[in-house]
Length: 247
Image 1: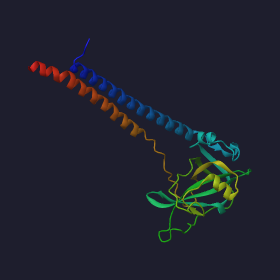
Image 2 (image 1 turned 135 degrees about the vertical axis):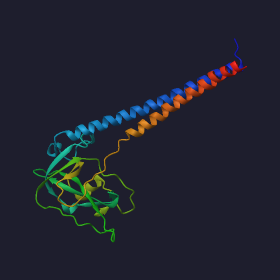
Image 3 (image 1 turned 45 degrees about the horizontal axis):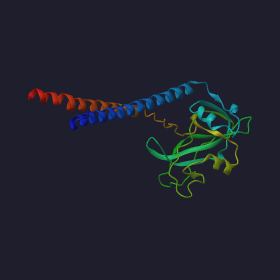
């Protein structure tokens, strides 16, 4: 049994159309799964934030595991203790409300414990006339209670040589900072939310979910699948038949 070149071409076109349709449909389904995964993360984050504030004293010491820390990100916490203001670091090139400034990061010694938590206290604008001037921040010296959420480490910025040390720096590496200060820092970071008594801004950026982006990509892939099907039907079925009837 032999096939004509026309029949062979038709089978090849059908195979290519089916293969392309399978690929584009698979890509669309993959984007939908990515969207579903991120929606699950958002739901888990919201559930975490709705839980009662966490007692940090139950978290142990500096050997807390990465899994334990990541599992409680965005959980509300309360801390009682006092600031170790002499170790305050200002992270440069951070923006809030579209203005350049610093993230103020200060260790906080927990009461009745030797453990220390690194707290992202808030944002302060830089001095427009003298960029390297350390801002004046009101830091209570007495014991106090603060509120916040467990948060990811501050995002890493491009770092020039020599900008990873000193009171003003680009980034803060936990291991290096622990070695530098000798403090028993826990493997966590807290973004402070209250009390707002030090003139710092705390409009912390919220992590983008990207769910809409994945739905948009899925729509494009499924649209391409539909286009492939339409083109195949038009050029391989409808148009030949119209030509046949016209003849």
